[in-house]
Image 1 (tube, rainbow, N blue to C red):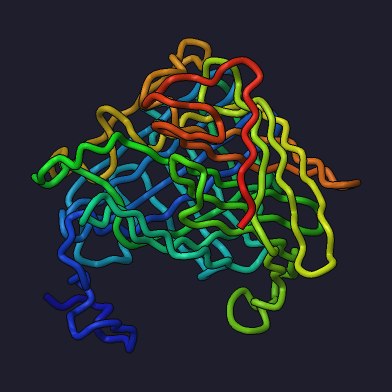
Image 2 (image 1 turned 90 degrees about the vertical axis):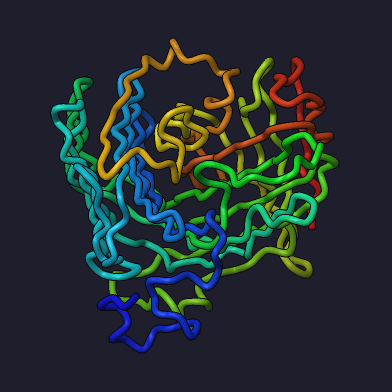
Length: 381
């Protein structure tokens, strides 16, 4: 099946662009972004699942002690430039530089029009591959970029005008568990993942941290880097842009888990420089928590890639204090963190998803919480 994109010299396989190279139903292509201050947080996501014929999106805000979300899902358009569904849209105004996010859903409690502008290059993260027996459950690439926001977000909790507020955007694509699972023999292995991701913004530089760990603490993938803040006309990709990134020699962390929970009450990122560059440390202090269910992650109703009909729109509102932090769909979180790096002070997020046993934290069950005073140290690469 042909589409307008087939008129451009961008093919990666012998197939028209409407067809993915893999028939895996879990093939996806996702936009994701966030913005934050010490007092509020917002995030948006939109994805297509070509082999399921589905597009879905969500926009969420945490403000004045309340987490609000709007969800939309429907039939995927043939034209991939139509990155909108229902009241939600993400528009690439200038590739790798400017992106516009809208949630025209005042009747559901969120009315938003915000624009992201880059302050770093786009960083390609290492390819992430997870297997379960003979099956590949995750095979994806993610691109991360740091930036600032302008615009307006209006909810029942008040108005946010994020004039120059910091944030991150990412794009990821490949294969990820989404939608109704395909029929298969059970593996017998308990679910297990430890995922930590921390993009941090400082005045003159930004830092990147990523790790996937197995139950014994060994690494599946890890990455840590320091990026320059660049000017509005500097290259955002290519060899010159790549020179604005310092990849570190290893990836290491210490995380202090809150008693009874699987999320931090503080963490330390260790910056291990190549050669005789020595070590620096970034201390992370949590300020507020966003439950990733607000964008559909592990959501019991609005999980990613599920068919709700040609168009379905919904919303939810939760006082943060009423959310049960031990429920499966509230385990995956992003915390807005104050970051102290020597004489620098910045803001960022620490994303955490720890399910199943994980020896460094002493977690042994599927969703059991940490003991009092638990500290985990991630081994360096």
